[in-house]
Amino acid sequence: MNRIVILLCLAFLAPLLPGIHPAPAALPHAKSGSPLHSICNHDGTLCVNSALRHSLVRNPLYFEVQVQCADPITLGWELRDDSGRILDQDPEGDLAFLVKKVSSTERTLAVRDFAVAPAKSDHGVLILYPTVSAIGRESHPLPGFSIPVRLDLRTTTVSFAVPGGDFGDAVTNTVEANPAHPVPMQATVDWRSTTLLYVKPAMLGGAAAESAARALAGQGPWHVVRYSRAGNTVHLTILGDGWAGVTYYLTGLDYLLEKTAGHQPGVRHVLFDRPPDFGQ
Image (cartoon, rainbow, N blue to C red):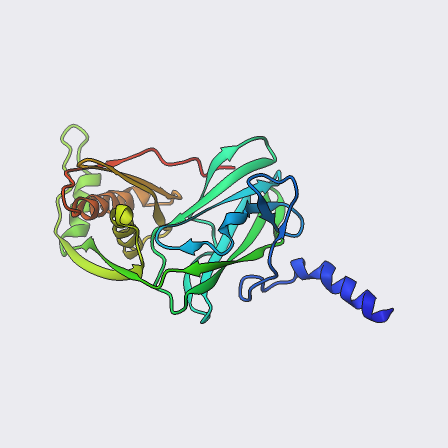
């Protein structure tokens, strides 16, 4: 009898215990009647398409999460291979954005990550550890879950632009110029390269642009969440938070992204599209 009571207590407490992202949690369970043949966490507040389980991860990583919760959710996550190497992580949910809102309690968040690092093993786990918060209330974790995935062991090297010696002065001159006499951003850039988990050929420009964004230090990170190309024109969408001095940061970042995306063969125009709604 005592053994049964202990097991029941552990089953109840497991989703609430800390450490769900340092160590893989139990597999999610299928939820009958849930959308998209979903698998869900223990309390059903988060569901993902069951096709995500054992799917093959390449760059860009993309997944959607159906949320059943009235309060805003911070969707933290981590991707690691079976050797324990962290390929990427986003504890603050900076890469999550809203793609669909059905009601005040039902919505779909998406994550797109262009810069997953190379893996050492061909299997790994995607770990979700969401947090719920509301104005005037203390944040608290929701039950998370771990999803086994397969990893492409091939790699891709991308090149991206970084600030040259006169970059800071060029940003200042552009931002602080008289509006009646604007000063176009013109600066020297240097080039670096990085090796990533295999990048789909159509997404090479997006992976390079995100690498440029991550290399530019700022008070709050901005990320490339969408990339597409139509003929000689590239479309980029970036996402991030506002902070003091962000105008200077974005002036420099836009320039680096234009140089990076424009470095792809045949590209002549780089356009920045309206960012998705990251509010919930």
